[in-house]
Length: 326
Image (cartoon, rainbow, N blue to C red; front, side):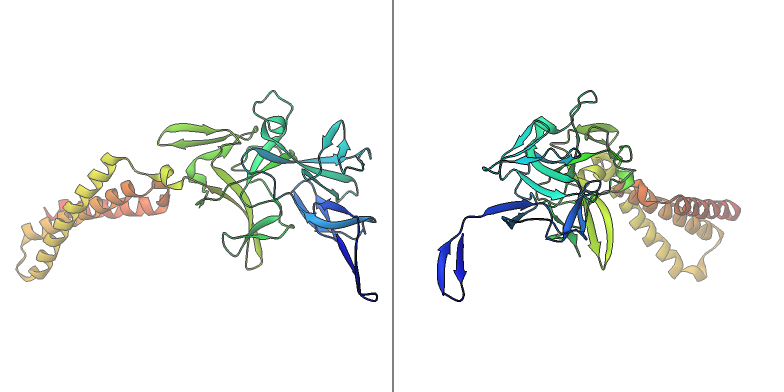
């Protein structure tokens, strides 16, 4: 590092320690939601220069970011900037340090997935959750990751099957096209971090390392919302080929029924009882064909209970009218 003396107008080399702080100056770490909050305390950083903020450089695919809180004040840092805590050593560049909201020391470390992430219900490792943006970043006014630091992770109860207060580590996710998760996608993350989805009556499972989901806070016009995204929305709702073919045939039939109805309407002055009854039958069949074809093309969850009952009641009344005319 080079220091410039404004009075003497000279440069000189200065030795320094680059303090790997997790949050910005004036902020401390809130471990339950993995975020930075405003701090009223002034940290004693004498001898350190704050250059490195967050662990966004932690490898995406093979590592997880784990929090270690120093409850017993056992944190030690040697001259080589190797941090030691609870019989664990963290090499410089693989960790950051900060204070928690409870004024205890904290080490956040970038560690290998297989060393820290839970893979079975019996091991003592930590639950690993996938984060969409790099560490210290979140979505703001869209799907662009920007540095925020103060937006953490709140686990959605209807997606993450975890207990309140469960600790978890973070896996940074790769870039890719993401689709907002919805309850009707029938996907959930269990207590060991595995993603399970029901796709066309078949259950597919992914471990936390390869899971095709991520969660992130998104701020839109000042409103912060915790979102969950999936990487394979099209596969979830892709209709089977026989459904597609039958839907196309129903739409073709509906087209000709519509032409028949138009013809009857244009010649309504000369319509007799048979033509009126036949036009009513064509209308019933047209509505039914269009409804069934749309339901087959689109996921059934798009149709609420009220809309289905309304369509069914309309078709029933038209059918009764047809029988009455007949």
